[in-house]
Image 1: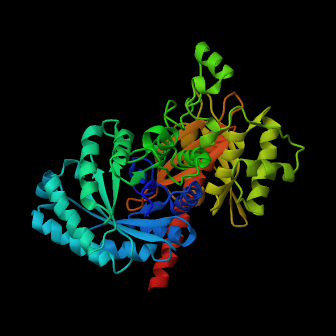
Image 2: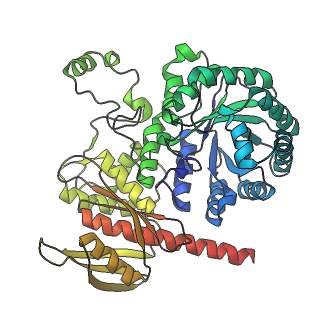
Image 3: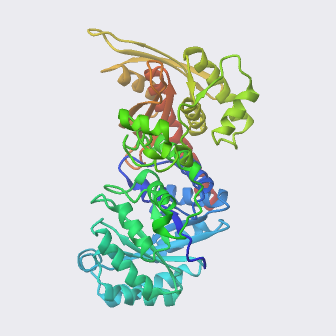
Length: 517
């Protein structure tokens, strides 16, 4: 075992998706998983397979398409959870089951209502049962940050003996300070020795998640559990981009420690996750925030122009940020030049069908915008990929409104080979659009969230709209994405996208149920 390598365990698709408003459908999860593989993540925690049929479907489909990263499913220390996790990851070339039980006094007393002996017995059985499905089992001592060291050693001994090869020590509620967590990891890492790899999973309730992760690495942890953009429950998790770049940038402090992360893919991965979830990193977010490599102070600008390292400790291009990059193409540019540009942006697996569709959108955009930027093209490609399921396709939109008038929307939609048109009034222009689409499709959606983002600067910037819609009491919320210079047109596209996402998931799960029967 290479004791200098830090294994990167990404849980964006599991813990990150638990962030309020960050749920993704199966197709979106697959796109994120493939990008995480390209990023060089060692383990992808693809979800909680036993949570729902949709979660099982997502984990199993990711297991079928990802070849280089290990695919992992979380499970409680419960037989059915473990079985579902094992079945979901079985087709992955590399796979893992991650099972857990709480070990802190407060959790055992109030949540589990179990004694220490009962917890140990449950933990042993969970690992032994997981080993009947996979060779690679990770065991987490939930709320390790508030657990007693002596009891954690008992549990670790038991589960390592049962076959667990990775022991995770989560600071589940983000309680510990770096010095405290470092000391805990050091003692437990020395206790485990070569019998198991020590992992950490730190939450950011006190803003210390990445600091705690790095303190753990310095004290013997060799796996870090992180998320893109720091997504996760409550205040989030340790951000992959921060932990990885700290280790890379401060080689002097971390000695020979390294990760296998392909760092120029960090920014593209961040943008993909932000686009899909509709949750943008704060502007001053380290590494991937809009201002991460911006310098407004005259002194700073002067210093950077004279020598980059005066105010930048890493190069923007090291994480995939290319400054002032504008696509020098226009409406007369050909497909060859356009493909060459998207290859430069890292989209090297775009099919001819996708290329043609995106190229046509680019031509339309080039007619309307003076400058088409890399971010514009990146968003065009991502938007096409996110709207691949087109049961309904928006063909036309006409709206009418004034300060004292009646808001109205006329919508034209294509369904199979049929063109459908309808119009409706509403409490506002958006409400009229949504009501018309509901009537055309026959699905009554409830808008749960709506976000609009300017892709670039200027009055002619593309508007990126994200809608989150539920269609019945039992279904989760479905995300729709829309892109246009016209915000209302982007809104209509996003709402239709949510309908398509709902129907795609519904149809796929129905077919899977029929096949099982």
